[in-house]
Every structure is written in C-alpha cells, then in structure tokens.
Length: 230
Image 1 (tube, helix red, strand yellow):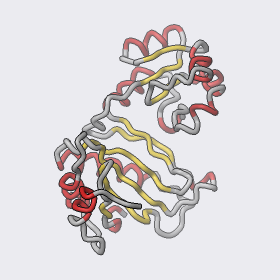
Image 2 (tube, rainbow, N blue to C red; image 1 turned 180 degrees about the vertical axis):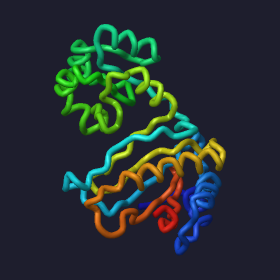
Image 3 (tube, rainbow, N blue to C red; image 1 turned 30 degrees about the horizontal axis):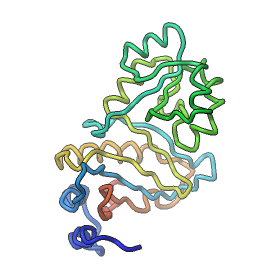
C-alpha cells in the first residue's frame, strides 16, 4: 500500500522496535497528525478473545471524561411520556413505528446512536438488518435499551462511547480529537482501558490484551506497552 509523503515523515517519529507508554504515544500521535482537518484519535485493541464463543464476547460502554469532540446525533424510539422526556433531554430525533419505513425504504441514517425503551424493541427489531451491520442496534449492555432515556441521552451527549469486538477480535474506539490536550487524551485513554480490562471475560485464557495501538485518522499507529494495563 503506497503512503504519501506526510505519512512517511510522520512514521519517522516512531521507533517500530519500541513499545511506548500511553503518554508518549499520545504525544507522538499529536505531533504526527498532519491532515488539514481535526483528526480523530483512535485506539485499536487486539484481544485474546475468540468472539465466536458467547462467553468471550465483549460489549459495553463508558463515558469519556472529556468527550470525543464529536457532535453525536441521537435517535430515540419511544412513545407518549417517554417520547416527551427524550425530546426534553435533547434527543435529535424521536419517534416510533413511523420511522421504520423511513429507515428501511428511504435509507435514512442521519443519526449516530439509537436509544430505545424496552417496549419499543419489537419495532426496532424489524430494523435489525439495517442497523445491525452498522453497529446501531440498541443494546442493554451499552445502556441504549432503557426506560431512563434522559440519562442515556445525557451520557451519550457527554461523550459516552460503545466498545465491542469486531469479527477479528479487535476493539476500535475513538478517544478524542488531535486538538485535545495530551492530558485530555490521556484521561480518556485511561478511562477506556480501565473499562476494557474490567470487561475481560472470565473464559479468556492467556494474554487478554495482545496489542494496543493509538493512531490519528490519517497517521501511523503507535504501539503501547500492554504490560502496564494488566
């Protein structure tokens, strides 16, 4: 894969034979970011889980202390008083059955997170084929299937992010923007890694965190010393 000049220059800042502390890695990622937009800083965690087994799945959510730097659009499936509560709490879109054809047939996906009250999951279930592959299906473990829609919306707007294993047993999560201070990114990183270490399934034997890499959207990855997180 051919990389551009900027990427090549940024890659020179990294010693590939070295495993960095989180603080050092974040400083390098910020220095290496050279895109004209405010790049997202992402963490990629390769785990020792085998996601084909239900008892080795990881899925959860955590509120990052400094948010993600992204404006998150929240869609809430609720009715009556709960719909009013969602609107009052700042949901971007609120609705019920009438949203199904709009999402299914018109391809409307102008939202980043979906929250639903438990009684609406029968309706939301019809959208599984559309929302599932995009990681948008509400889930009790992520706190997005709840009667307390106001709290769910407040947490999401404050910087709550969801983490889950992908098909290759890797977790990909944003922890902020390049414009954040090193301290803000380090705080967010620490909060995330603590949550994931706590979420380790008891069925996983051997090394849990195989590798942890921090990178900006367009920049090279910096590998961390995982021994510090165990």
